[in-house]
Image 1 (cartoon, one colour):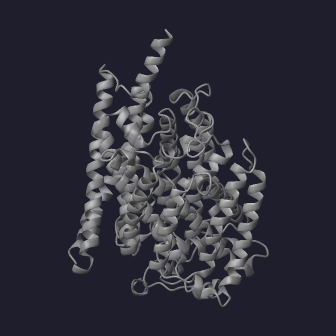
Image 2 (cartoon, rainbow, N blue to C red):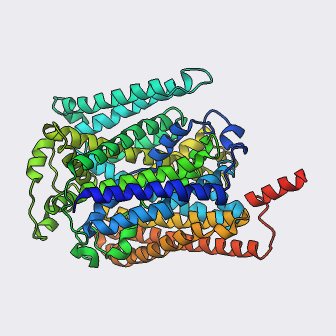
Length: 614
């Protein structure tokens, strides 16, 4: 099948969803009003609460939510064929993921930029707040580890990739100083943007020079060494002010991400490669070499981003609402950024499915497993020579996606001899996605840990208390770093996928209570329907993951600790989600039955203001 039909169909659905569905939600359900002052102005502190231009904040938000999930999940899900993944990505995003991100962002903005945990506490009750806090923290740590292991597998033994990614950090910091401190009282965008993009392209070119030099061994690291470097980066990045590294790097990354996706779309339009994968493969019934389970329910946790993602709730209720300039910007940033991420997932699926199946499986499984599949590689040896790296057995989806992207780019006029550059550019592109998730996720997890520790020792509750920042950061980075160091993509990705989707279920349950308490009960179907779909499919997948993946690992002496840890975490996720959903249902029922609203809920605050005005 030609790829153009998929791409055009997806673009039409996104355009209709944004133009009509999101506008209806903004006007009728969330009633956005620019006369209400956003937290960025009300609580401006120059560090976390910083009113930002709509496009800059869109860039930060998109870069923060668009981690490895929309790239890697669809790539791995190609095992089932292109139709299941395509339908789940497009329909799931327009009716579920975009609504999820949009409503959480608005709910947080109306709670002064507070976290999902605080929204749960004020809209549902203290028990739901504590359970949500524990669920958010555990799921967040697994999410960062699940995405982090992809960049570890992609950058190991790749001096070209390591050099390019390392150069992004000082480039972004110079941009941050220039953008936010270069002119008193004014944020500069044009100059820093041109500077950042130009130097980033230079870094990609110089990476090849470095990789061919006698200094290449200094930038050649093993998986474990990359893990330790990633931990150091996460610790430093989360401790710096948001304007110095996080926001400018995310803004720069957005140019790279959207620019690359635009080039891929143009490449598909000009090259229109044929899909080499069938609509459905024989592995829909299970037994696949990458994903061992059946299409249902494992597709819904394999594509853990791109359709709907619980991690987005932490960004939509973490950094983004603290920088929202106007309420109406929330539609473009919340709904629009998720639609853009879903498009990324579609392009990733197309790139993966345009590869020859033999080459695809040779990259994504071990040589031993591949030899039992009865398949043969076609272009893999030639591609390995062109990119200068051994490609077989580089599991995790990242390498196969980069090859798929390079395969599309090489079809453009004059690009056939630049496959090596396109491949390493794609690796940098993927790593940028992941690093934004690592530092944003670590920062949010640090806030949650500080809040938890603050209940035992009050100074920890102050996000600017240096000892508290240091201790909580070490705890967070050490936790996800340990999971990456001791795990593999086959054990971490199912845990990440299920945890991520269960967190989306929690966020939708909290938003449902928010809508009911705000007097918008007749519209709760916009959150209830996706909550039921995501919750049901993910609970099924979580239970099967415990019984079919983690528990068998726990029975083997060499993997007993890893299997027991994974099974315990998944069980904790399930218990936490059930408690939060039940609490939300009870709160909604009580509100509709006429019970008093929680004192600190947004609905109660609006009622008090109306009473005072009267």
